[in-house]
Image 1 (cartoon, rainbow over the protein chains, first blue to last red):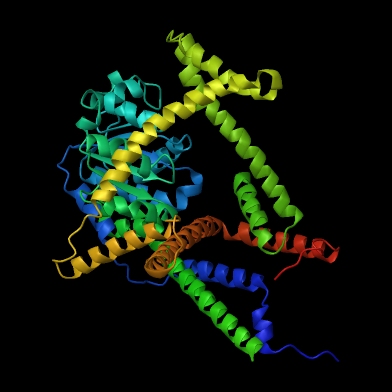
Image 2 (tube, each protein chain N blue to C red):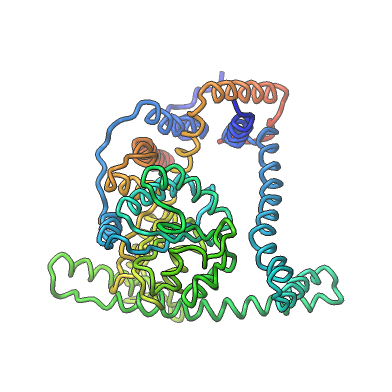
Length: 283
Length: 227
């Protein structure tokens, strides 16, 4: 009769699918049974909020929404909270996109927020959506010369010369702030390199968590290249808290924390098992 | 209930079934994804790029010079004809030259100079801030020295480059942590979508599980090693 493997041996070769199941449980259970956990606002997100908050009423903001459906879970909650913030403060917004899949997502956000129904804003006067333009950094550079020439029509095909808001905006010099929500390239990095460094326009950004570490140096730079930065769903949750509109990001934080704790436990467990098996092997 | 909900949920579960093992349901969803993505992006490229920037610009606005750009882009396809393949270098040279010009200046002014300037910090005054500044300077210098390959990493250089490795490891750890956070966020987003119609999700989970069970009992995936 073959000898039954020891507990240590069985744990060492545990079927990885049990780990997947545990991870799924750590995500699903907190979503089904929400646990209120404290949420602390990081300085980067607080600075982002403060920078927007400091803008005078009626100031014009250029919002570049550059993400696609794959970045939606991380960036849409921020986009929603930011849109609430911008229109609550009566700022005027010019929206552009350098990602082809972004304009429909922007329209969904505008509808969800109720820009016209809740905040009573008028298209063309309080905000415009210029849609997508191909050309990446070239479009960024071109907007520095003339936004109206770069985007001759808006998303619906209306001439920008027929939009009252666009009479006041034609380059980065005419906007009080550049806000970029990006899931990659072109995005925050390119805007900092091409636009912020040349036109010194005050800029804040939101990105996926993967890109977060790459952009932190722009926030830490002296002088600051980014006045504030929100990274991933965590940053979005913090912004929702600051804006006072708890949404999808805040409700996902319990699941995020539970799954992170589980992963930390897996890493510790894996290392302990490795240590024990090596000690046993060496004995 | 919308058929699209069933299709979307089923495809999500088909993809997740890969966590059990590679199987025909996963393969079906994978092939559908590749095909639809290709079609979607081709349509998007036409609607958002070619139509407004070429077709309408030429036909409606009379910007005939853009035909030159079109002809240049056609030359890209000469790669498929070996005798004239060299012509594809012209549009490539145009693209590479233009982006190199823009990016060199952008990187120099946006990244290199300001980031270098940001490392010139006071580490003698300012309490905890000074310690932070010192750490940054030591981390930067030691990490850079780790990538200095013109001398063997022994003696003082060895010690410093070893410190650099530690800083790099901390940086990789932070990046890994953020990456995990990002992937978990995507899982949360999709799970939340699946929870909007729990009965559909439950029915499909049962169907996928039964399907995988039958497939497995018939010997499917027997050659796959799971550890």
